[in-house]
Every structure is written in structure tokens, then in C-alpha cells.
Length: 146
Image 1 (cartoon, rainbow, N blue to C red):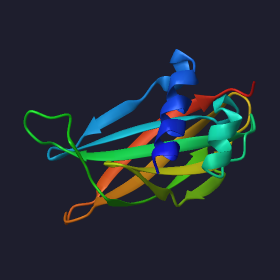
Image 2: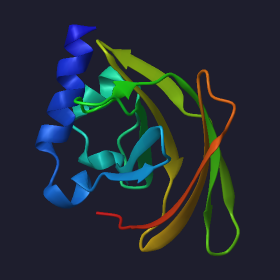
Image 3: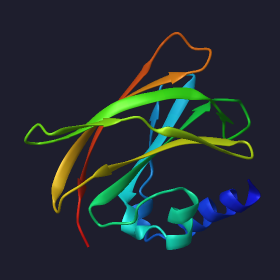
Image 4: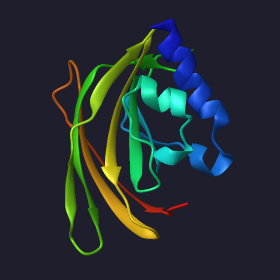
């Protein structure tokens, strides 16, 4: 578990600043952090540890859900995460992110296919454990094949 945490931390440390553009959306009691990047930016050892295929035509979605707790950066929350990613021509790919737990951290990752200069729209539903309200996340991002 510690080795995997270190590997994932190394992943973020080795990425260019543009790839680290993590975004977050506030949902009142919860904050959902998300980012997407090409898998060829991930170090081979890290990709291997997570069973990810490195390719300029594969990208990775990473989602983390935190419950707001006064005086802290938040408390990781277990959640159900599903969704779709679609391009401007209507091609849709299903997302079924898998849960990763490392120490106190909980996050969800899934990979999907991309083409050069393709803009993808993500529609993600997050259902925090213990909450009756699903959180709807929608964002777009353009990908470049390197």
C-alpha cells in the first residue's frame, strides 16, 4: 500500500504543470476534485502499478471526493462514480472508474480513448456514501496526442 501511494505521488511530481491542472467543484458539503491527462505522461513504473496502458491515445480520469471538515483540507469519502465521455460527433464511451485506496486517500480512476485535438465532454455522477443526493459533474477538455 505504501509503495502504491509513493508511486502515485511520484506520478504527480513528474508531470508537467499543464498536466497537473486539477479542477474542483463545490457541492456544499462535498468538494469533488477531478483531472484528466494522457497516459503517456505517466511514468512506466506507475502505469504498471495501476494496470494502466501508456499511450498518447489513452487518457486517464482521476476523481476524489472530500467532505468538508472545518479546519482541515477535507475528509476522503467513498463514493459510487459512473459516467460517460463523449466527443463532438457523438461517440460516447462509458466510464466505470475503479476505486483506489491508499492510506487515508480514496480516489477513482478510469481510462478512455482520445484522438489528437479532440474535445471531450465528461458527464459524471458521484454518489457519496451516506448521501441521498447524487452530485452531477460536467466538464469539457481538449486532448493532444504527443
